[in-house]
Length: 286
Image (cartoon, rainbow, N blue to C red; front, side, top):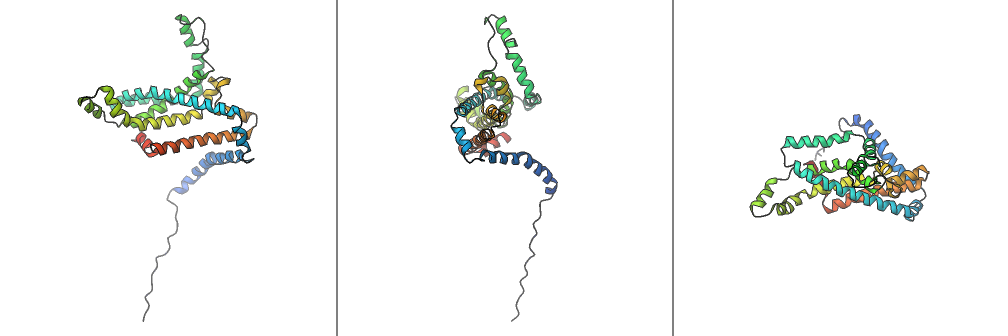
């Protein structure tokens, strides 16, 4: 009986996607700039095992700076939300071309250097600055107030820089909300406040969470504003790490950096469990 030969197709050779070769230099450069330093920082932090982390957790200065960092970041996030939400709610009611003009004004603030902004606030809030001159000139105070080098000045500087991020995140999620639903709720007997609270606000919560998360994470890693506008009693984690690096205490500096990164990762995971990152960033991209 004749045997029938079984034809097997030749094995396919693995081929890289077209154009990947052109991207390899860029990928290697990005990896060298981002991945390698992060891995190096983690390795240094665990150079003596867990000794660096044990020393860090036993340090009262670390817990004080962590508390100050969280408090300032939360306050900056809340202020950005309180200022950004009404602004976005207003411009989303305008025609699209008008709203884009307002967004263009918001985006142009990114062209101003952060250092320039900080020194501008130092001039405005100084003892001989515009605010104190106005208060003394109006007779509201007898002598200039100490408005610099405290927590208030740090929050003002951070809000000035972070507010555009909050506005853009809120706008991405709120521009797609149908205003006709709130109008329909009012025609059914709901007051404007009830229509906003029960119809509009729940639809805007994903954008609120996305903007708040973005601003909070950026605020926890701020260095320039706390170091220039803050006082010695308002030292944040970023300033603490800079001081440790200055005194060549690499173990404490790197372990603090790893913990700060871990806090950001935990925040992302927590928000993913609560509302879903796809829902958050999907609202921003819509």
